Image 1 (cartoon, helix red, strand yellow):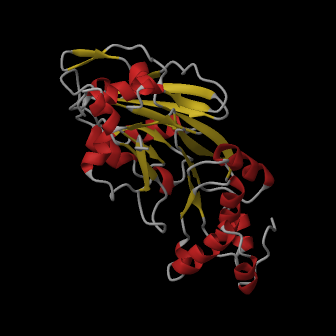
Image 2 (image 1 turned 135 degrees about the horizontal axis):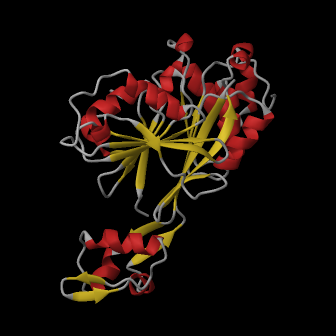
Length: 341
């Protein structure tokens, strides 16, 4: 099945944590966390439409200025979601600059920001044409774990404890749709951009939408019944970083990540430093791997390695993989106790 979106880390595992969700069709991308983003090209950053900030520590929010600088003269709206205090953080960043050259002649660039903690708490709007003066923004009519819901995908959140509230996020594709070119040719239909609209209609259940293709009218229902479009379960991508190995945090991450296709999860310390991990509200590589194994994810990617271990990247990866694959012999050889909290 063709992927609707691709996910990758923004930086190497010792760099600021963050993941880019890049849509294969359409000029759009999402960001999980907003630390240093210099590794992304300007073209990639300009494509970003939503940013999901886990918390307001510097390594998760310092990239705001670069995002703003590249977006400032674009006729776009960027929406940020984060824990309580995000709106104040965005406003403080904007107030650090002078906007006397902006006005009604400026590009209609808009920032929207929402504070979220098991539900929406506040919303704000900052428009370039108004020198980024803060105004209220209506709250989305979403409940439960939902932060964003569109026809093709949704974003869910969970609250973790990092000494402060820290959010984990899940990208859920509505459905995965693949084109069967042989069946399409048998219908006398060409491959082309029109298929993006047909796929979108199929994902949102609009089966009887009329689509014009080279003078013919086709319908998503007929394409599916003929096998030209095949639907499968949508991928789920989870991002979880900066939290301690506590029962409440583990349950929250498992609630998002059970059976996910991909999990990005922090693995800050080697397991010989459990006390340091505990007092800083982080995970060891073994703890991160154990969570990934318990979640039953198809692919787990560690991130946010501590720079204390700059020369021990392979050791971090080995401990993580041993726990993911539940290899007690390897863990024992490294002096670890599998399954211990």
